[in-house]
Each structure stands twice: as structure tokens, then as C-alpha cells.
Length: 274
Image (cartoon, rainbow, N blue to C red; front, side):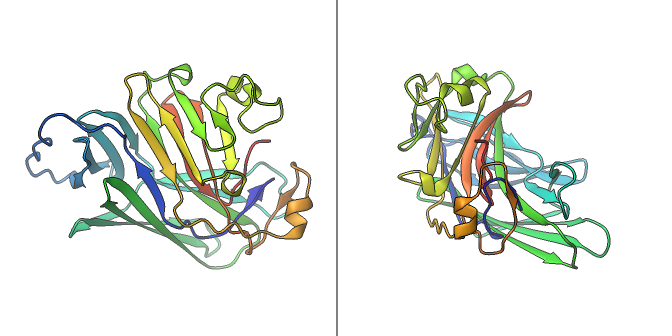
């Protein structure tokens, strides 16, 4: 589902590199067993990637070492649009119902019922490869209803990090200072003032979006296997046209400011704010 710029139904592998600096000391000690915490592993920076259970559902927490603390209490995120789109798309978020960690990988699942016999079954496979965090999402729908949907993998910094504290990089579109970008460019000062950047991955020379923090740490979100399929109708549509098509197979990357911190990640279809 996509208000304006759309995409497909499967989030292919998304990589998040956390950050580029290495910690100087030994990796953090593994904490004692905790029934509300499952540890996936550690990054070269010393950061620990954990699944944390709160109020009966599992979220993700990444911190320690020389890494910016980031988290996501509700990793299963959908955007739903009704037939005819009389109202704005509805955002739905949930934690995982089940997390299984084994052999250096985690399988996290949840079911999101939407009434009238329709249910979304989401399965995320998380792993650490090459010093980066990888996720592959599979989203299956049972039942039948009119409308459309999208899905997102998003993380948030902690609230003390403000929008002006971060420099953003999107190849060919944004290199920290947006002052010299055209007013309608996706990396323009207008988007910066609105505290929201969102860019279709096929509009970038490389499908990645990076954040650089004041202490020198950085986080990069990357789709290593972009596809980019769309339709001639979508490509020619005006930016405020809402379209749905199973052939859309492109995502978008970006960041925006919320009270919880700076929210960033990857979503598909690739709806963007023009």
C-alpha cells in the first residue's frame, strides 16, 4: 500500500552497520540469564544486541561499548489503507510474540489480526554477519479484504539526541549540509526544517542511508539486494496519487524526529514525502 510512491510485499535483506568505530577494550561481559532478555550477540564495537520482553511482547535493544543506544519496542510495523482511501493510512505496531535465538541467529514472529478473517503473520530473521546486523522479513497475509499494506523496519535513538545533533548521508542526495540542495530535492533544507528525510532506494546511487553522531559514531541502513520494479503508471503519477499494485518492489530509507528520539530505517513500499 502506498500513499504516493509505492512498492512490494516482502522486505528483502536489510543491513544495519553499527557504527564504524571499534571499541578499544574487551567485549562486554555476557549478563546473567534473564527470562526477559535474549542476547543475539555482540558487534565489533562492543555493543550488545538483545531482545527484551516487556508487557508480554519482545522488542529490540542495542547498546553498550562505543555505540549509540538504539531500540525498538514494537518491531512489527504495518501501514494499512482502506479501499477508496477515505481516510489517511493507519499505522499498526506490535512487539514480537515469540523470539527464538540459536546458532547465532534469531527468529522473531508475531501475528496481527485485523478482523473479518484477515491476519498478518510476520517473521523476522536476525543475524550478525561481517560486523553488521542483518534482518530478512517475510510477511504473509491470510484472509481477503480490499485495500493495501506496507511494512517497515525502524529504530529510534534515545530522546536526548536531537535532530540538529545528527548529520545525514544519502548518496547523491544529501551530504550533511542541506543548504545547497534545491528546494524540492529530497535532501533539501525544507525537509531538514520539517525534520524528515525519506528517499526511494532507486533514486540513490547506492541504496543506503547513514547517520553520524557528535561523538564520531555512525549508523548505516542498507538494502544489499535492491530490485526497484514498478509500473509505467506509477512512474508517471503525480506525487499525491495513491496507488496499489503487487508489482511494486522498491523500498525507501530515511529518518524523522519524534519525542522518543530520531527514528530511522527502511520501509516497503517506498512511500516518500515529496
